Length: 85
Image (cartoon, rainbow, N blue to C red; front, side, top):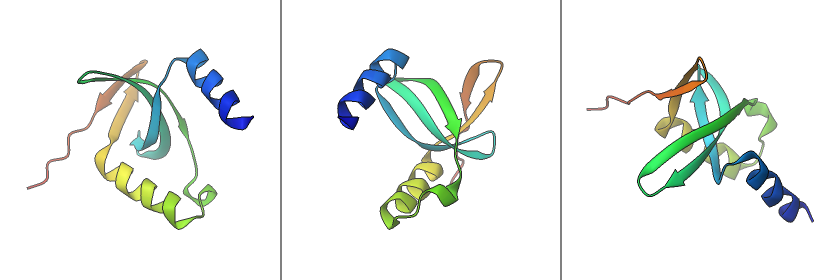
């Protein structure tokens, strides 16, 4: 089963969730763990927007990228705060 395999892989790598985001000005899938009010970014992989074709995927990309922007440098993630107002 694909779902079971995906769950096993995620436990092996050590992340619980993922979302789209901007990392170093590029679109990426960002993998993270969430404990209480703390979010730890574990990994990311760069992707192409053209690889996602459905309306739902495009909507997720748009919504997630507005919320999450990161800088990855020297093995550390730094979240960029959006100054809207």
